[in-house]
Length: 467
Image: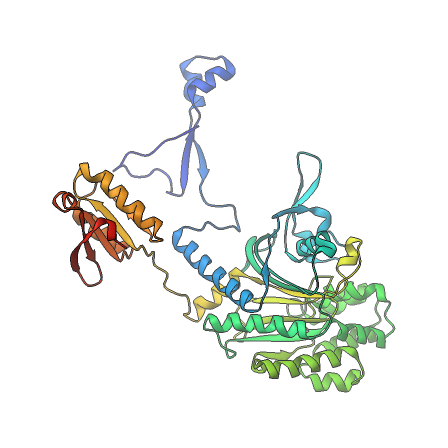
């Protein structure tokens, strides 16, 4: 195929976001043996190709890439300040890693298919199972606790809303081998540190806390069979998305009594830890864990960021203890991030369990929030130097100057075949710091002319001493 470029000055026949692809008539003749003009003409009809990315995905032109890099740099700086190590995994994983039988919504949103070797594979919808797989693979070659983070792309075929796409990048921080609530306290501090770095305050964002053990205690009160626990979690995670009547109907369909359903709904409506303690008693493990976490929050200095909300259960089946999610206090956006404890995940892959907890923090919702708060940074392109030969025969010396500066760690744009007026405008567009002119008379003396663009100061420097 060859791409046809429209002649300059002609009005476009189709939107600019489409390309015209034309099959070669020669190729057509070789294919079917019909050399008639009519046949050749019909084979050369243009086929319209939409140059937009697939629905729900994104391109990252330079200005968007600068924003993405800035956000990822903040993810990495926070992770390293918490002494976490970076890891990575393939985007393509085995389907079995993500197929569970708890009725989770995520299992219906997989980009899954059979590869050419007959293996069932999937574009990962989340990162935690990949992380668990690597922990199992590393085995006893690593010592606990493990503190790992990653920034990876995830794929889900779901309905798109503000801050929700079919692909997104996600920052994960996870701790393996730390059974106490200290692990959750560390992870929540990382989230708060990230918000503070971005200029977000506790009046903008809060973090809701609860525990899966709260729901377990309620189910125990009503003698609900253990095998229904995960299914009930998946249903009550829809609180706020479905009406109370719809939630009650789904719970009753699992076999729960009306009394148990009412008890579950009433407890999950609690927003006070002291009220929860009144209902469940102080000896319940969930209450003790949450009280300890709130105490640690005071010591860390982020108590004003967190609040108790019994309705937080998170939708993934593997959570076992404390769960949390960050939300914007104005209620305009979906959850900014979320996570919790998952002490029994590894055994679902046929190995010994290790206590673990972690969170996932997507790139889409936080950018929406930063836009709303006017906190998106101005990230123009920035170049250290432009090197420009004033004569064609000086292109070689200009190349030598540019190469020398690049080896010294400076970013250098080597410009040729342009007018000096264009070069000055280009320097302004890319925020260059210096313009280095290689002129004939200067080069004969081993010199170059340097112009500091912010002050318009000009001077000559020996080419070999240019820094």
